[in-house]
Image (cartoon, rainbow over all chains, first blue to last red; front, top):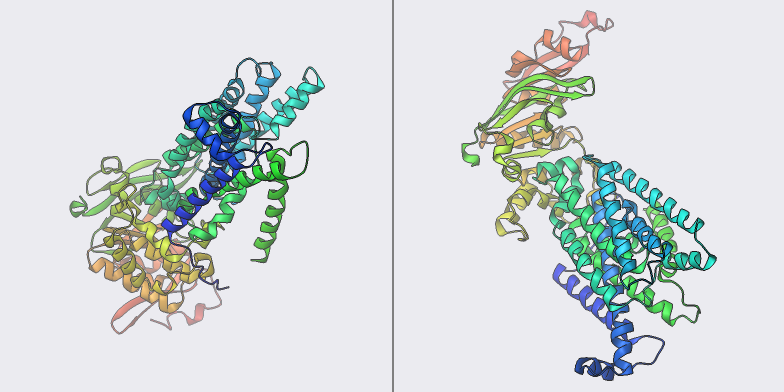
Length: 335
Length: 278
């Protein structure tokens, strides 16, 4: 079968357009909300330090929600592309290495032991501790294994462990309200997150992005298989460490603040692949933007839809993501 | 650096897969300017030897030196510039990455020459173009790899290896999936590379191609090197019977000698025709 050559847009233009679109969606997300907000007045107020109502809504509610959405989406997208490239598996996503499950469990522990109300950053810190432990566990299990399968199996085991303990916490939860609180948190949401939480997670996410984006060229060589990449001078051990650690940082810190949001990391790379000529290296950055845009759109949708109580972001992405996955699989069968 | 690298010398190479030895004490030398055919039956250890020489697989015992220096001395990137390796199959390319365009695949061969975060230079583009012309695949530049036939794909991957422009080229079965025309083109190309000063080591199952195009043959069987020398000396009846369990037919055409497998050693049905050729 001869496939037609697909024209791909010039790389700098593609990046510029995606960046502009992401910024535009972030601004739109700031402008949309339950209370009417005079953006101009709010910005002027916040800028001059007058804490009027508008300025408060902007800085305390809208801004963290929009920024967190963009950053979390970027983390999921770029990690999804990195892991699909590393594991050379189209179904890989940030969830497969078990770090997001463990981050969620870390946060659940904070709920369970009642620290959630103790201080503002208890939840994200618990989540990060969970992600860190999972990453160490992952490397301990995957060890020096050179095969993607070893890493996937270690991820499955980490996920299973985190899932089991999360279920245990739910099972033993002191009262139904505590259980409900945990369940709702696990669904993932951007609502009611504070600027402090965003500022805690953002530097870690950015650090993760840098690690992932710096691996672009070596990731591309991996498309020809591990041995060929090694023959081209790629240090496979270091590349694997860089990608897993980068994903763990980006996704672990994102999930610690927002809860697990599925499908974004899986779907974003698939949407972007044709636009970069299927090059795994270039896919990283554009998948990050795609992830950010998906999350921003989904989060605006949950606010605009006339459904109350507000749908959780994770529910929204799953409702849209699962049918997309099904149609993708059907397209694959036809191809 | 690579100017002084005149030969790859391997000594006492062993590779163990559990209790089994894939290679059992192999010595081998590849010099620049020669094309050497590595022959032997399935499972003889040909690909394993190539991978060890390429620095992709560390041997269980023994060492490889490149112009007298160990791989550790040379460093990953310098070694990658000095030795290009073409793997046996394109199967390792996954579904999604398989849709990468041919030219982007060939460009990966420039990786060892590129500085961090720098884009492809004019010299890189020139090398990519040369490699695609040599492997006769420039016409597929913009086609996705998984839209090409098996043989076309091999030519793109060969161009990827050529694009490294390394002084040593190790090619694992480059001719196996090709049609007769492209088999001849590839073997001529590899021989021309050797004449231009490259050290070429190529594994082959086709004994006619091996005997005709290679300066020297090395015969492996069950992880050991049985012979290493001129094609005439290596494709001798006793050695062929021992390694391949076949009898060979020897012939020459326009002054070039070649050998081709004729019948299994224990095949009685054709015994009476023996001696009718040569």
